[in-house]
Image (spheres, one colour):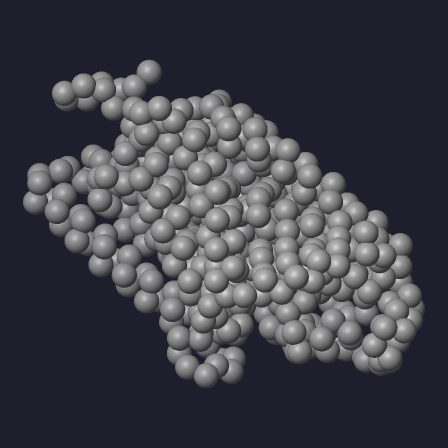
Length: 498
């Protein structure tokens, strides 16, 4: 039922998303470029990692798992829309909650635009594999690529607008399709070995792949793990849907666990399969010349039919990212506006669909700028690095909030159902703080000491500028609330209304 307000009734978000929809939101946000691109282009971003990508990937899972535990703990006590913002603002500090989630919103919004833009080359590769040269040529045209990218983005926004019930009916099948199609790549990768690939390259390109010995140092390994951590970003989308989840105190933590566990296993198998078939020496050499994808690498070994299948799988993996990511960023805006630290119109709920339609449209507009900006993009890893910086800070705030919530807000802390033993919870959260802070330090040092043409090609200064903008927005809005006589201490001590 809508809640009563002065002058009538105000629609509220509908709690219609079940466990399957929540899990699909996390899986669909995580599996995309993180599985098809980053494990291979890491050879260019972190030269020298060589044959140790799988081990670095496994190590990158550690901070993700610790962050997921922190999210699950906090979600069990504070199941509201815009979860990451709500958790930190109630458990640690409202300012830190806003600026950390603001940088998260910015980087994810840009990532949505980039994913929309990168989707088109996958469609082009499908048309090439099918022999449709005319269609492939048209997709290389700038205005066609922009039109397709924008159409995909706003189709995803439309899915979000019409309600979480329809969203769930679409995303759950896409989640299962993603696992099935990724299974094709895993089977294909383990069906061939390096000798098969070397023979295929020699037959097609007349090229001989040389063997190289490699033993990366500790710094190279840690740097690669910090970048590969980006592949695990996305499960936090589940927390942002806290205002629309059924039985949220149970289903939110469970969905986070299912998403992180299943995707982690998929990542390991997928990456191992591709490197089983393709020598890392070839990947490292080619990554210096062009952008690589898993379908493009296995295309040397597979007949055209199966090449079309795995390229289509990658396209599906990218496209299904968009509705889930848009859900996450729009609910962050909705939560800010609900607390009064963003324009109140953003908190509007559609009277029929019961979705935050203004926040969804605003998020789509921001992602549109990401598409337009992709025309000027150089190395897409700059966007990845910005995302890693913002999410490591965000996840670090989650772990700290687990530690501070019992003291800052004991009433909410008593509602925790995940790791209810405070000693165990404290130890796990403290480990999360140490590991996440360590990964953030490694990533920041790598960024600041690596080669770059200008400061704006480094992720850390760009992230700092975004944080400064977020700080300005926060203090302006909070100043308005104080002048209006709002009791900020009381507001941030309680959960936002349903």
